[in-house]
Image (tube, helix red, strand yellow):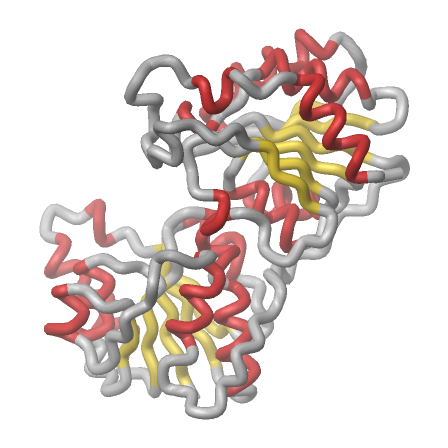
Length: 321
């Protein structure tokens, strides 16, 4: 059985789709998956043992995206089942153009017009649950059990307990706590843990600021890891302190004890999934969750009001040795 899966674009969203993929694997144990998605989502999920093909969708770069989508569909061919975790017109078109009979996507004006199965999935629940219910649309005996997040990248083994610091968040500045405060928290635990600073290519300056404020030996990996290396290094951490971000979900997949600082986003929908040693720090504001990339009011109080001492206390309460 061949199953086409269009992955979410963001790293964190792709990882939150992994329980849905595991459900498909459970109900179709002999299935072979073809993944189509962004570069980061493909790099994270292409190691699945049932993945026979992983393709980075670059149709957006084409001068004629409709034609590029059609050509990609014809290259992919027909499947027994096709599902999109991306609620977007060109994703629906890609499924339709493959001539696959059984096509599933969340209900929207374009999916209803183009695809065979378009269930209504409430957005008022964790994104993992939304993806899982979508994947089980055509399964009659689904018992409602949703698995853990799953990455098939071997975690790194460090010689000493290691604290990972992730101050970045690709979505926008509104989700980012402050480098000097991350540094203050890391310094508090620097005698107990080796420290690794994580960050993407656009977060190198932020990571350097943490390193300078920290003032103790650390490893700065910002801009120096590919997705596989990022996952492996986070997976080897003993403790992770982070903003709401893709790396936060990487840590959850490996059950790394994690403290997450939430500001403008919905923690009920995108918090770590089924990680027992996970704590959230957030201050409820009248304006939150605004879901904006930058603070629309200019004060950023949802993040500014969270102090380093508050985070330090929550880390201690987590009881990580």
